[in-house]
Every structure is written in C-alpha cells, then in structure tokens.
Length: 147
Image 1 (tube, one colour):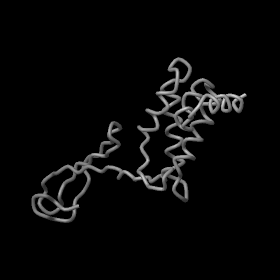
Image 2: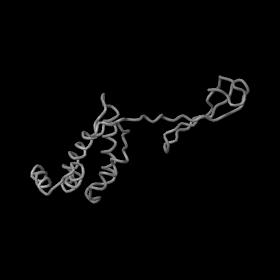
Image 3: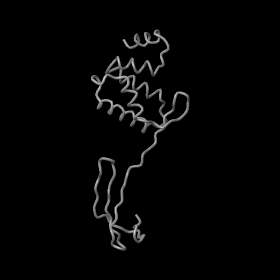
Image 4: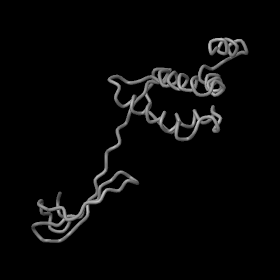
C-alpha cells in the first residue's frame, strides 16, 4: 500500500473495521515513513458467472432476473420471500461452482422442480411461460405430467 502523502510503501494498520452492509473492510493505516494516517477499503471483487441461453449465446447470470421470474409465478402467501432468497442463493452457488457453464434450461428445470414441491399452481404458471405453451393441449399434457 502506497502512502498518498509521501508515496512510502511501508505502513501499519492502526484500526480495522468490517462493514457488513457492503461486505467491505475499512483499514486505518499509518505510514512508517512520514507518520501520517490514511484510510483504505478492501472489497471482494464480483465474479461474473456466465450461463448459456437457449439460442446458444452467453449471458451473465442475473440472480435478480431469476427472482423476478419466480415472483411472477408464485402466491406470496404460500412461498415466502426468504424461501425465494434461499433458493436463488442455492442456484447462484451452483452456477458459480459448476465446472462448465450452466444453461438457462438447467436453471429453469431447477425452478420447476423446486416449485413442483412447494406450489403446483405456481409450477403451472412458471411452466406455461418457461415451456412456451402454444395451446390448451400443451397445458393439459403438463397437468397430466404433474399428477
């Protein structure tokens, strides 16, 4: 760390505070060359996670986009905000730790499997958009598969 006053490269940490709001660490330092104090901040660099879309193109994974899609399909009295957050965190971890890029189809199937166990009606709402039903017969077939 270079001192902003004298450009010295040696300093000691006088005080350290973690900020849970933005996951940063604030360090108060003192330059060992000129004795003046300065503050530095340390933050975790965001990792961009890429998913493969149905058309073969790549897109950065967006947890907020996933959350919005789920919220459109659910009844908030049956599935809580916390359950949605926990599921989205699980999907995020899976996409980050996967050895190869995950497809949006795999993510959609994870959502369908999750909704099927919690709320069959929300499952059907999500499936009708996700699977792009074109007729009532498509909807009937999915209902038969659900049972």
